[in-house]
Length: 286
Ligand code: MBD
Ligand code: FE
Image 1: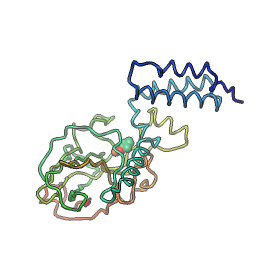
Image 2: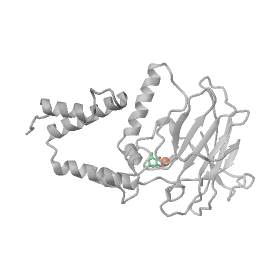
Image 3: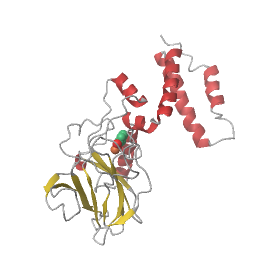
Image 4: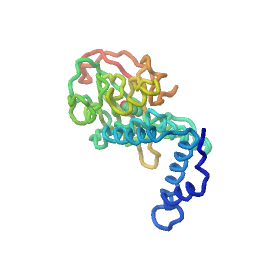
């Protein structure tokens, strides 16, 4: 049963008034967007006969989401962030832009301000007995394939518990642990000396996990490393790679995995010369 009040003049006038759509004050773009979103919400309430109790449950949920500081986490979990990426990819394709390392989502856990170091950076500031050394290295190239000197590569990832510095619920990490920024050398090369991350899980008591539970979904991500790449005259790239072999690679609650973002992990020795804690280490070229 639908009460079908959405199309009545009373409701249409209410929508116009609430968003001041006919007025000259306010921000026109904001009014246009909010008018549409509110209109879609009113229509959904009408079409699905969403009850007042259900509406207030939703409003209370938004309060909890805010208290938990998880709005961006939920955006990732609902595929909203991935949807924006899909649209940017489509836009690039229409413009004839193709190739290179694919973008994927930024996620909610980046922190600006890691000190920029030349060529290589050691970013494991805190000891972590459960994580082995990992060296991440690669060459930044422009769209023609030429190496880019003086590009800045930023990197951030979780520790062996799946926690990020600045967001660690155990309070165990130093600021900027496992976060770094490197300026590429004259051959476009960058290197991070760090520790192997494990996958992330949404806070079990948080609003995002509560919603995922109601959907019958998990809130976990496979082990991954985030990267920003920026250079003069170039559009910034936001991407990640996954650690190959993680069982959740194709079951990421945030939908960030892409075929080209699963580089091989290689076993190496000679960690002592690099200042690593063991001679054996893992290397990922990306
Ligand atoms: C993460 O580490 C992350 O990368 C995303 C997208 C969401 C939650 C935690
Ligand atoms: Fe992440």
